[in-house]
Length: 312
Image (tube, rainbow, N blue to C red; front, side, top):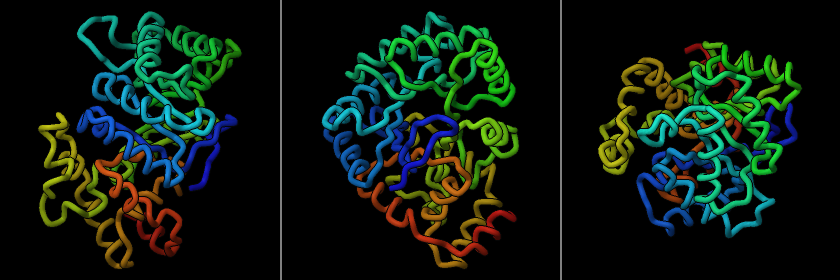
């Protein structure tokens, strides 16, 4: 597992980040299950772990935090997020200083940690002035409770404003942007976000690098019983089929090219993001799935295959 520097910051993450969305704390509340997944990720060389306070309404933070306590704190990077609605109250959402300071303290308690390495502004909040957002996250850096701050799924206009405010106030900018990204869903390349991040030294992570499993090809002959689509009611998540319907032509061509070159679609999907500098945040429902997904992480594929994929 290689390590990559996040933009202009000094922080390096493992090429693949382990993500807990829809699995730990949602699909399973079992601590032993969480331990096995974290242990497997660690064995594979992953040292970057991603959670959020809205994953299982805090359950993911509790389970992942406890799993990670068995490892030396200085040997891994863990991130969590705030601003996503986590309750009915007007104070349970957004990027106001009131909400973020409360939400972060609650996250830290659940995780059982003295600090987190990265704290995300989890979606842009147009109702909170950018100066308030920037000062709040820099305040948390000043307390030592977070080492860096970041954004997730922010529009390019908000990122531009954020950088202007940080420059004006001489405060620390977010070191990375985490967005949805895969071969199938590539809006970061067309909405200006990737261009902005590349031009301004902002690192990028991409969640859903397999497009909910669609890019593995496992749905070509129906819906596997243990797939995310089959478990949509259990998980309370039904977007997987929508991704396929919206991107069917591109996905079918992708799978055809992988077949032509006799390569596993899952391997190509993981390397696609890495080649683009949008490093994958990868989840798994079981340890062996994680092993299978990453077994060919460093296999070299023909350049002509990548060229053909770029043309789709």
